[in-house]
Image (cartoon, rainbow, N blue to C red; front, top):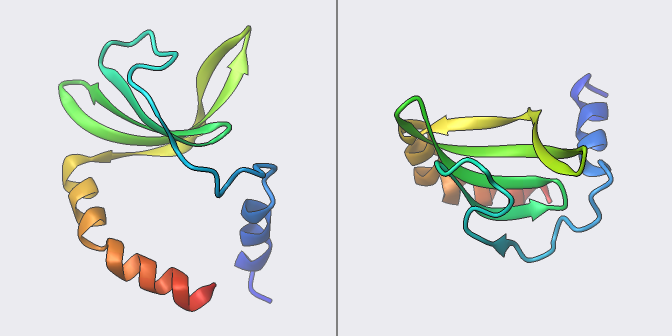
Length: 103
């Protein structure tokens, strides 16, 4: 077994039982930052948002946690520049095919 085998298993069982739940769409949900638009919630503590960071638009996919009753962004996540986002979008079909082959 490769060293990556255990890590994949931990992602598959990370405690989110609603991985296949329909995404919830909202605008500025629980966000005090006017430059942050929550596009959808992937699961209970993961969300996709679009934000303006230092004058540049980014797509942010991130885990959140609750601190003092407020949703706070965690370290686990990725912010994609528009160039990176467009490259990812161009390869969605290839990614879907790879997922289907490995499912």
